[in-house]
Image (cartoon, rainbow over all chains, first blue to last red; front, side):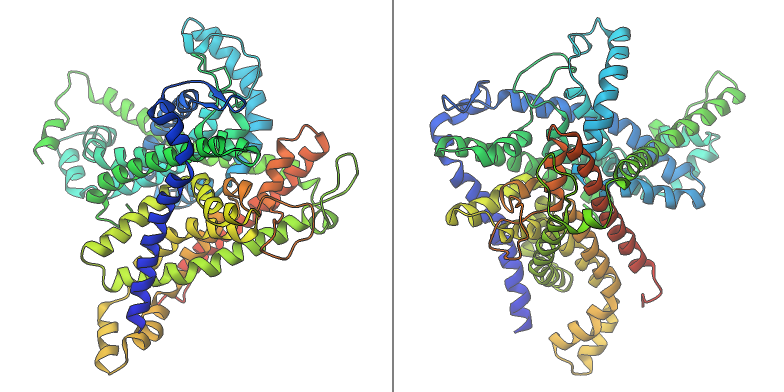
Length: 297
Length: 291
């Protein structure tokens, strides 16, 4: 009896996930039928004429996530190296805890802070100085009319995924065999040489897994992005221009959408997010599984 | 091992002093990176505390939102609404999550348990907004009515993977011999599990549960088209219901200064709730009742 109950619960769980996929496909069917694959590479998003192309949204999602992953990847891996290898024991534990608490901050609070503190800072200080120094690059040229733009969204996302990169990379680095460190040190390498040229290269598969996992978070993040990205479906080279992401469009327009095609198009964006995160998380699991032996992955 | 040997440091032409200097600065760089996250957390907490403390008082915590321009008004219905929704979600997710976790820990080999684990990992990475859309399609659209139940359903889906994996690990960490001894004494499978295995794993299970509650308490995206929000006191979960994160969001993106103040106040309450849940989760795990 008891066994049947726990079997049933597991079966129910599997059914639930399959139902999730099926209902998103069913709901987006009107849009799938109307636009087909064209949905992915046309760039007109116009509810009035019922023309829906997701290209500007895909662009905004990809670019903002890329900014986030580059920044959080660099800082997160080095932070993980410090926590796992260099930090004294009394400092490593509380510091890890504080960084993990950053992951617990609700996204609406990140958005609030981003909107009222980070965005004005980007507009009056960060963006002008970047333009002054690197204005010859297309990504740092163009007018700085608002603080809610691609750069601000990328920065907020970087901050939000930093704990993911740091915590998982730290676990991966800790799991590297002690022999390697000892062998390297006994050959006369300094601590830094050991970490940067032996330990981190040995952990690279798992670290890559951590980055892929964090990428999934950045792609799907909704509320904070919506509050700071400016919400305009345009494709601009400049990072100082407003943009829009897949998730933000759903958040802004879903409750006001009417008509099967419009709702279907928004549900299709949700389906796209589902499929992308399915692939990304599957990949991350594969990469981390071998390293952490399934503890976490 | 071969790959590592190729990467091993080779003799360098420069001196040991320079190598030690590089080592020192490299280490310092990693320390700076590690402190960035911590400093950002402190800055955010500081801002929310300073901006929010002026808004928070007893009236703010216990009254309905006021229309723009009117003084006062609060987040009382949002706090209640979030409490009801998260409570319902916990009631939905905890039994199923725990049962799945037990199943995986006790019979965790073969293709089906692997499939459950895989789906659970994938589900934990699905954006909450996509889960909200799912809840909309199955529980809002058919009834043409927003409801707190649909929000609780979305929250439960967000909580399930966390509960499932933490309870699996918790039960797995209980020595197999305890279970075998109980079964050898003639106890049934059910009694063994519920009276011997689960109590031994209890602190870790509760930690997972608290973390999953903390995870959804601040969640906003799926609420937009499930619970929807409401300006009233609402206790019926079949109706649209006010939600604290949603109130913070709506106040923040409004053009009114006085509402921004309310948003900071709401954010302070929200962040305190989430941080307390997180710290509590750690405290349970590290406490002495662990057997």
